[in-house]
Amino acid sequence: MRKILLHLDSDPLASVFDRIVAIDAGVDEVLSYGGVRPEQVQTLVHGAIFTRGPKDLKSSAIFIGGSDVSAGESLLEEVRRHLLPQFGLRVSVLLDANGANTTAAAAVRAAARHIELNGAPALVLGGTGPVGQRVARLLARQGAEVRVGSRQRARAEKVCEAIRGKFPNARLEPTGTGSSLELQSALVGRALVIAAGAAGAVLLSRTDRAGCSSLKNLIDLNAVPPLSIEGVEVIDKGKERDGIICYGAIGVGDTKMKIHKAAIAKLFESNDQIMDAEEVYALASTI
Ligand SMILES: NC(=O)c1ccc[n+]([C@@H]2O[C@H](COP(=O)([O-])OP(=O)(O)OC[C@H]3O[C@@H](n4cnc5c(N)ncnc54)[C@H](OP(=O)(O)O)[C@@H]3O)[C@@H](O)[C@H]2O)c1
Image 1 (cartoon, rainbow, N blue to C red):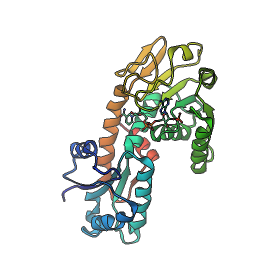
Image 2: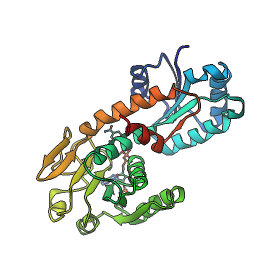
Image 3: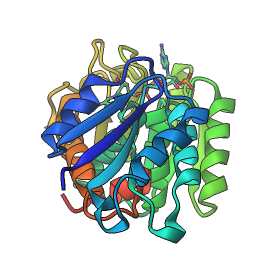
């Protein structure tokens, strides 16, 4: 049975990146649809689940991409609604809109190589973006005490509420990071900082972190100069700088690619998986 991936993308042009990764992960045929809206999902899902018998449906799967993670989440909800598990008519589904799940999983795995996450004092800069929100969620699920940073504290508060809505035990604290004073106060006692800010935005200067003696691990996901954490290089991968273990976006990106390919390959092991942040992270932990 040929492995067929139905690629649903909320952007007008379905992602070339995601198509190539799928092929490199062993998919035989990628059927890419761009500009997909929720009301179009039923027909697309039916095309996937009514063409092969239940035993063969593990050779069909769905990937949801696109730069808008909320749009991707809506597509995932809609896909779920149109699977027919009671008849075995379902396929496995991976959500990785904006690369958010695989990138966040790679970042948190990088941290886990050096720090016991359970109880770890962490700060996520750019914590309101799609990647930052997932980083915060994954760290909190591992038992970390997470400060979620935003230039507007109210935005961080909303993110914390949304995560607590799903995971009530999550230890989260919103924090403003709009000024040097706020940043320095957000850094107090933090061992781990993950910067998931917009491309090309500096979020943490050397001066602002100079007085923070608790720092052990800095991870910057931005690859576009200027980088988000001053002093971390884009290719750093566990590089020690002044006693702090550093990762840059390329250092994390290598693991992200491995996770992305492994997640695609896993879709074809059975037809009953829904892979979102936690499932992708669980897989990442085995790589
Ligand atoms: N390495 C990889 O494989 C990979 C894959 C995907 C993404 N990425 C990178 O991961 C990072 C996060 O991605 P994303 O899509 O989640 O980012 P995003 O939505 O573009 O931005 C994240 C947050 O950054 C803050 N921000 C925006 N402009 C800013 C500015 N000028 N100064 C300071 N903060 C600013 C905003 O938070 P507030 O307004 O709340 O402060 C925003 O919510 C990006 O750098 C992206 O390029 C890397």
